[in-house]
Image (cartoon, rainbow, N blue to C red; front, top):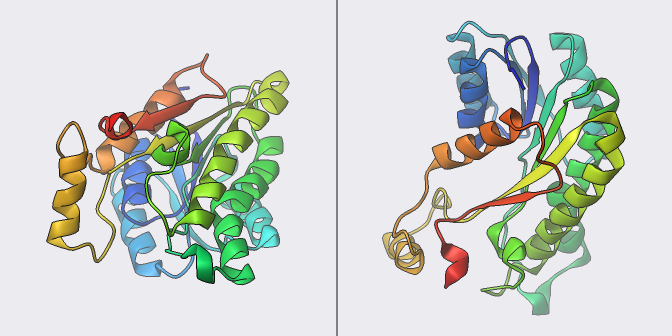
Length: 244
């Protein structure tokens, strides 16, 4: 897909989302950035996009609310005139030990990591013409077919659901020529608050010996935008982490 004059909606405007927004703007797209509480980061990302000569809008939404997902798609089309690419990047990564998981924790993880991707895709697809793109963010763990650590059960299950959603949507939307794929990141950016020891441990466990950085996800997004014959795939970007 040629991005000049297209519109990209990115749910999640911090860190990696901001990098993706700037990259697609550099290739000529206008961008809608969705945030929940991180308004400052969204405004900074929007400013960097406008500095490239493209339009940018910041939309506030609680991604656990289906009606909010519908509204942000409608707002994108109203503000920017169309919608060509949806990047479902919003995520909730929070520990939840199995012995103490509450119903609220279980549903909260699924609502943001899985349900929101479905609701946004459902709202976005009718606005996309042939060649539209939906790109979901999964995780290297379920993409590898096995767990590696405990205490994140809701997150793991939700991201596994994202992979199933991606495959099912790809088939459902193929007649409309809308391509649906997922990216499964591994160690890209250290979680906020990670200690030096935790960061080093991940580097040691990763065959390529480092964290990938946001640009590795940017490259994967652009690949899936550029390709006209890839759909229903999960692209693992993990530095070989799944090999150990």
